[in-house]
Image 1 (cartoon, one colour):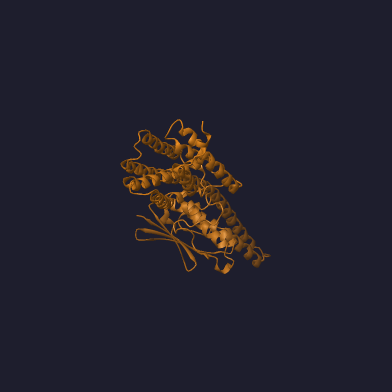
Image 2 (tube, rainbow, N blue to C red):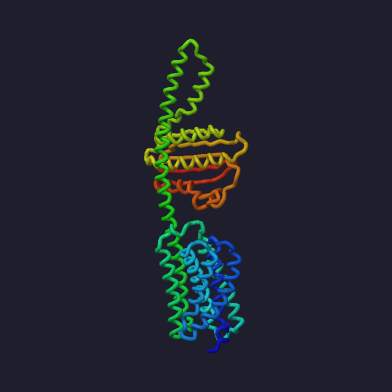
Length: 423
C-alpha cells in the first residue's frame, strides 16, 4: 500500500473549501459553543486533514463517495463549533450543500461545452466567479432568513426529513453520474441545477411555513393566557369598584354627621375616584382593560386620553378585545416609562366608526426611531425570540377579522392604526 497517495491533493479537493465557505454563510447566526475560535481553528485543521486522507483511502475501493465523506466531516466540524441542536445544524449544512452543488453545476454547464478551448486557469477563473455570484445570491435569498434564537423543537420534523432527503438525492445523482461516466456531458447539468434550486426553495419555504405555524401556536397560547389574565383583572376591578362604591356611601353618611371634616373627606373621596372604574365605553371588556391601564398611567404620571366607542367592537370576542388593547396599551405604557420628561408622557386612544370602517388609533410620545421594518419594529429587550410578540399578537388578531395594521412615527409620536370593515 502506498501511504503517500493518501496525502495527494487533486482538483476535486477544492470541494473542501467550497462546502466550508457555504456552511459559513448558513451557520453564521447559529449559537456558538464556548471557546468558539479555538474550536474553529483546531477543527478546521483536523477537518482539512481528514478530508484529504479519508476520501483518498475510500477512493481506492469505490468511487462517487468523495464529496459525501467531506460533507459528513464538515457536519461534524459544525457540531463541534455550534450549540444550536443537531437538527438546526443539519438544516444549515444541507442548505450549504445545495448551494455548493448549484454553483458546481452552473460552473460545469459553462465550462464543459468549451472544455477543449478553455485553459486550466480559465476554468479556475470560471469556478471562482461562479462560486462568488451563486453564494452571494443564495445568502440573500435563503441563508440570511435563518433565525438562531428560535428553538429547533418549534419546527416540524418534516422540514428536516426533507433536508436530509434532498442531500441524499444530490449525492446519489452524483454517484450514479460518476459510476456510468456521464458527469463529463454538459446536458446532465441543467436537471441538476433545477433540482438544487427546487430543493432550496422548497426547503426554505417549508421552513418559513413551519415557523409561521409555530408562531401562530405560540400566539394562541398567549391569547389564552391573556384571556385568563383578563378574567382575573375583571374580578379584581369588580371588587375594587364594589368597595369604592360602598366607601362613597360611607363618606356620604359621615358627611351628614356634625363633626365631619369636609376637607379630609374630599381627599379620601378623590383617592377613591381614582380607583373606581370611570370608563364607560359601552363595552364591558374594554372598560375593564382601560380601567386597569388608566390606574397604571396615573401611577407613572402618564396622561391618558380616551375617546372610545366600545359598542363598535361587538363583532370581536372578549379574549381578542382584551389581548388587542392589552398588548397595544402595554407597549405604549412601556415606551412612556423611558421618557425622562414626565410632561411629555402621554397616550391617546381613539376608537370610532366612519361609514362602514372601524378606526382604532393609539398614539404615544416616542423619542426613538423605529427599528427594522414598520410592520414589526424590533423589540428593545435582549431576548428577541420570547419578546416582541405584542405587535405580532395585534397583527394576528387584526388578520382574524380581516383588519389592517399600520405603524409609524411622526414628529416623535408613535402611531398605531387598525382598520376594520364592519357592518
